[in-house]
Image (cartoon, rainbow, N blue to C red):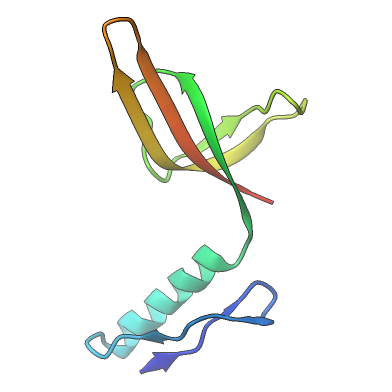
Length: 98
């Protein structure tokens, strides 16, 4: 089975999803997941934050950009924690919908 994928408002053609080893039902679920993941444009943001245990990939967080007054919500797509004798540094990669 081949699923044709279109991105954004349906004008950008994406590469087809071809998985001959998956069942039709699994292909349909994968196609829906691919379309959902690529339907909207995102701003990618890297942010240094105060260490706090409990950050998880896929978690929705509220962040504030110093250049704007209002906070925004974004999904955590990457977590980097660096430990030294002096400090624990935490950097988050976020995806913010445009």
